[in-house]
Length: 304
Image (cartoon, rainbow, N blue to C red; front, side, top):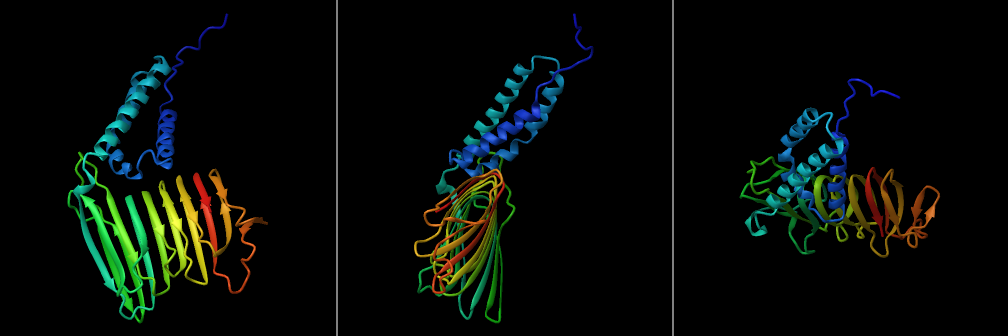
């Protein structure tokens, strides 16, 4: 009869449980069950990770299933508390700050946005607006959460918007909310970096010639431009849900590197041709076109 190996200690798979827990959160956020801005509150529970590691050490040799269940209960309790705290302050408690710049003699604009944790909308100003940009930014507790840098020279402008580090109370998570409206009168190059956020990018009426989007852990809906002859677009997404709409009457050639992501391309509009999805009329010289490159590690990408 085989004897048990002396000194063998079986512990709970702490890191495995933690990774499954993170995966469930990302899944619920991708399905719009949990808000992406929740990470602004959830990160404050990081000391719980130390507690869990300590429990794993102290309870080694005990029934690993019971220890694993205890760890899972603790993690779920933290998620419940974070969700509750996130919703304590009503939307009416958000203080709004406004920013604008006149169009004046600007002939070409470059816009860079670096946004973390919250909700962001980008769209167009009315055709008759005299401004280059108008921004409404809001954050709970009356703390300003936007940093602005603007340069103008020889008809060229550069606008840089970024989230400013703010002092947040433990109770009642803040949520950044930006609404950015840009002129539709001049060509634009737009570069957006975002993490843990909900984005609605309505570029249809903007004259966007170049578009870069880098999103980590977010939910993003993009309506591509339809007001320029050709747009070069690049989208990188990690653990994100990205929905891309190409307006009717706009042709596209699309390259996708999806890795582990779920991919859904409307092949009735963009049939697969070699290593790309390409509209039948893409090479017509009088056709408005989009060249789109998509890279997605984990998540979901839909092109329609």
